[in-house]
Image (cartoon, rainbow, N blue to C red; front, side):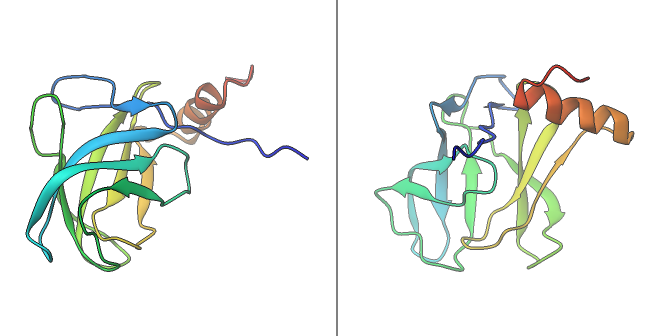
Length: 133
């Protein structure tokens, strides 16, 4: 049995550069708890919170994410509703945006950009490449 995966194609809200590389999202991050800065690759598969990086990112630590192209912060002035850490935001290539928590291990995230449920369903259908819009 195959499992459909929703691969998120995301771009920088500042420069518009495509940050999705295959099944991962390339970002720069500063980890406050370990005082380390470097490349971090988040899974581009919606719901998968795995990462690839050479820097230490302990569970519960908070990151400050930046675009690897223009070096602009991706952080919002919005706290996560689950843990209170700062949220980060990326644009979806199909329209709308993805907000995600900056704390390692927190599952706080949201798809958004539309106030209408029909538009939101259309966004998900475009992302899944289904014929219904």
